[in-house]
Image 1 (tube, one colour):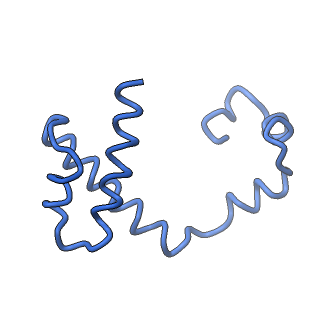
Image 2 (image 1 turned 135 degrees about the horizontal axis):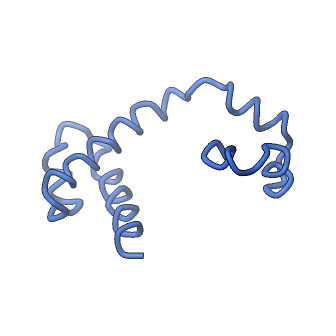
Length: 89
């Protein structure tokens, strides 16, 4: 919604998305969850590794670079799926 605030009012977007304005503003003010911070950091690292490999690395190679993180394998797969959806659609 923030990306579209220049062209559409918050009231209009909330109506179209069927959310309340107060709920939207409460969500905006809410602090980041303790789980989301590390996830965003790991996702950024995965994207950086993929960019450095000029798109050649898939989930197994990225996971090899992130071997110290136990959760990295499934997150690498998910991130690679999202990258391929963006690049190839």
